[in-house]
Amino acid sequence: MPFSTRGFANSAVSLGGRAGGVLAPSLTSLGMSLVAFWGVSAGRWRPVFIGYGIVGLVWAWFFWRWFRDNPREHPSANPAEAALIEGPSAASVVERDDDKTDEKSVRNHFGELAPPTLSVRALVSHRGLQVLGVVSFAINVGWIFVGTLLPTYLINVHGQSEIEAGFATSLVAFAGMAGCLAGGFATDILVRRLGLAWGRRVPAMIAYGGAAVCYGFCYFLDDPRAIVTILVVASFMGDFGLGTIWCTFQDIGGVFAGTVLGAANMCGNFGAASASSFVPRLAEQFGWSASFALSAAAYTIGAFGWLLVDPRVPIAVSSSQTSSEATAR
Image 1: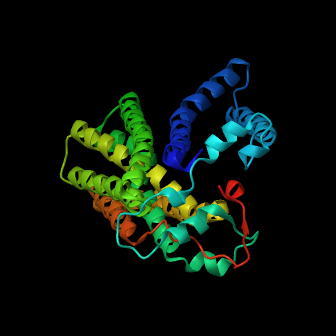
Image 2: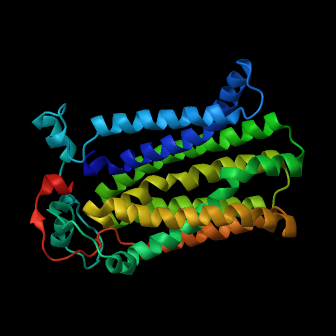
Image 3: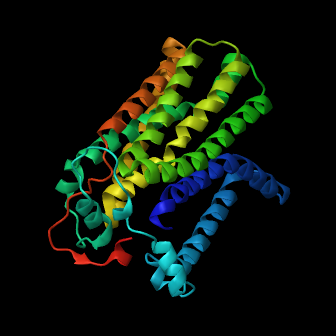
């Protein structure tokens, strides 16, 4: 995808992840029912998991056969298509603020091929990546309630049936999927109008600030229908920032985007893993309203953290670089 549609591309990938989360429980239940139909009563989940593994292997083979790092290496991409995918360089993005980064530094980041190695020191010392690690941790702590705990809350606290809780959870998840796409379009548009720095900051701050406000409202509510309605908005807002944050990993990482994204995403997974065990204990000790307060605080940290992130400042690499705009993009 060209740089000008990077937000949409990343949001589409994020949407796929959310869709998988929505479909997986139903597909697993259906698979287990089919296994039982064929006479397997014990351990019905095992054949389903084997089936998932086979699907993964088939996808890996397809990915190896079809995907390429560079469109010019793809057998089905003609030169005109490759040129369209490569698009204009990020040097054409006009900055409209007073930051010190000049066009040359942006051009070097997106227009030249970095060396094949990246030091761990450079990875951990980059301020923007440090902040994004904290932001990723925080927003996953904030997300964990709607991501995994909402059905438990609705059933145990408000006495809803599994069907009612499942419908509400699906509604919240679909709102998040819509937020993914909307946020991707937003960052693409704002980068063209505000420049790279604020074109990334603004949608992310709106997303996480909006999610924080929604969880703050939930703290004072008791009606489950009102809470679910607010959580639908919170889910939309939280996922509105996904395309932006993934784009920023790529902006900072350049040809090392995989390493940068993996490091920051690891921090996010630490947040989700710790919150999934901590939040239920917090709710048991102080009530479920405390989990709303925690999510609001976590998203607030995520929103303000973006003021310290500048996607125009690439991660430091060694001085030897070979000019190759197509490969870098």
